[in-house]
Length: 193
Image: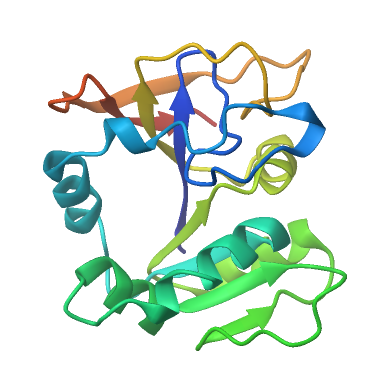
């Protein structure tokens, strides 16, 4: 059975909106592209070290469109590009019918049973990048196993946050923590089911 990991880039107040996208103004958001000043080689190398050859990715439509506009056009000598372009990618979408990015396909069916089947049938990793609404639904269905969070030393004060309000606490166990040269904390948590 696959482990499902959520990878997120967050401000200290858990805002995930607009990390890479300076044009993200949805909902009046004014801080698009806020992550650029915090990128460093240690963060990149840490991300590359986490890549597994048998990874399946799961994206929401917005995340897919953003990533598909960039990564397929990067050279294969970039290990992140080579990995993302090679791996299977599922997109939870009701609007996209054609997916141009190599090895990308619509998820098909309802999110929770489809992801549960992928986890059951796959021996490698299933990774969700971004995709706030998908993460919320998978969390509510107890399908998330780990979080890999890049926590940035910045409070944005507005924007879409990772976790919606909930009456149910989620207990996490810290597996790893390391700082980068720009003050980002790279944190890995296991979800205690």
